[in-house]
Length: 432
View 1 (cartoon, rainbow, N blue to C red):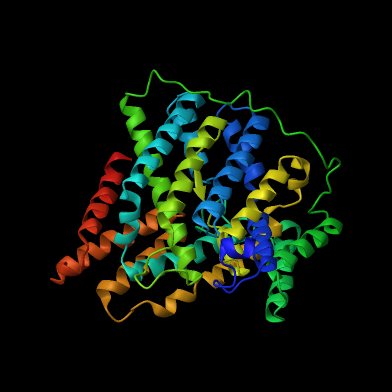
View 2 (spheres, helix red, strand yellow):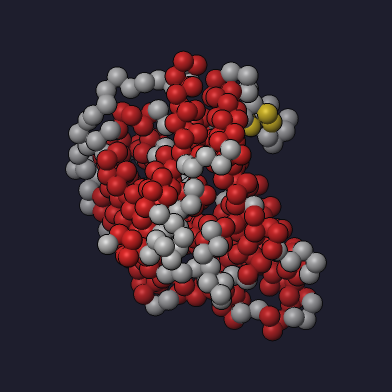
């Protein structure tokens, strides 16, 4: 039944491969169960309730992605989006977290409508092929930087002498991450099945005697109550200018982060069809929209497709069974909250760095001889890690693509929807 439903043979995969891929994806993104409550607590939200909301929203959205869209992508409250929620809307603009949750709810509802009318699907199709390939490469560099920075291998010097510098790799998390990189790399070159997942387990084991990883004193616990955040909306400010600005920013960040992740990871997995389209993209975008709506009701920031899904794809995940496995793991995680302190950034760093390598593969297919194609692709790749934003990378790529095609008199090569997307990108900077 599982074989037939997910078409495993047709996708050249097995139940074992899909399950390992799902576990790997979960391990690389499980940090969100700790980080999201920590960030949203700065907005005055109950940390325990946000933990439960984070896990449940990931369960619903990822299960929908697996069973409905049948794609190997996982979803949870997105990084960047949660920071905007807490530090900009609540602490910066002075609104309540209820106001911010209302904005997230409206965003989810708008996304459902946009998906139903194929607007988001049209935007995905409007991205030129070379930029789609560049998105995969850019995400590779972005995710590698996330791994390096999270483990302290690269740091931001406090004296401001350089933008980035080498951190302490002779002790602590930095050393453990380097050891993990060596272990996982050896497993890969030896063609060990499940190398990324096994690498994380071995790295965590090494981290215990090093004192970097602390074993939890408690294993099982009941999920904290959702009561402090469940359906906590505030309606009296929904027609304010600030709500429009907040809503537009959330829509923009989520739409293009999600589109970038779906296109980039699907490109790496060679899942694009003969027309360069992501299969079941409308269903995938619907899962994302429903996840955001449900997440707002539960009490968390915008749910988005996670770039760490690339780690599961790198392990061979090709169908919705990968996502279903990840969803089940988030459900189990509800009862094992104390354990997730073990899965630190030092443990996942090696996987994220190596997945960055895997994501680089489509660069071989980018046309670097035609500068109207090469420059937009290069800017897409460049800006994702350096602007620390997938969506900003897409902005630079698409806008430069339009400008260069027009300047060279090759305007007929531009899709009409691409013009609209480019205009929205430019508008975003003025509104933001």
